[in-house]
Image 1 (spheres, rainbow, N blue to C red):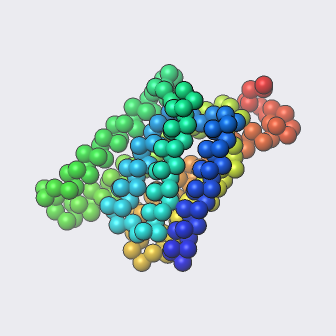
Image 2 (image 1 turned 90 degrees about the vertical axis):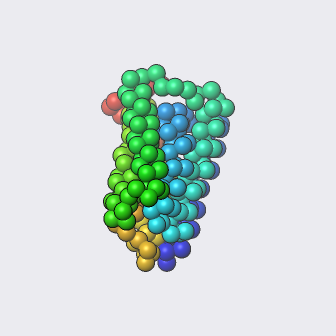
Image 3 (image 1 turned 135 degrees about the vertical axis):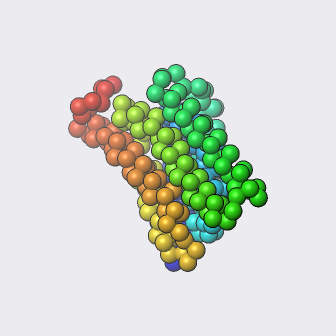
Length: 220
């Protein structure tokens, strides 16, 4: 059951990215460049962090797929000339905060690899690093959530629904593993909520196209 849901999470994740990348390449959607800058390096670090924290192979399928796919979407942003340093203050604040959090858990991770910590301290450091990584993930979604609220037509809901389902499958895979610990649920639960939020906000695009612009959505 663990591997079945692990593979399912990876398949859903890749399917969502193939759809998303195709739409982005054709300029039918406009990926938020600030979030994708952070996801490009952040998802790779999350994969390494999960692996170092005792995640099984089934639990690592989705983070690996996410890391590679995030880099691919970042490349598309670069090809389209949209991958640039953010201009708005809130977007800059999100990026700076994420860089600080990333540096913090990289420093903690480095310290974890030394002999300066006892086994108990290492276990606590593992959990602390995962919590900091979770805060970093939350920060990376802020530009995407704000931009999607402002202009839902920049996103498509369907890949975000697929990714939400992928994280639901990862949660099942995690709790099905005899190796799981409660802190290994921090990443998939948080990502499920955040991806569902973007799916809900971008759903307003479909409603706008069908019934006209809802309140708060600029018309075109």
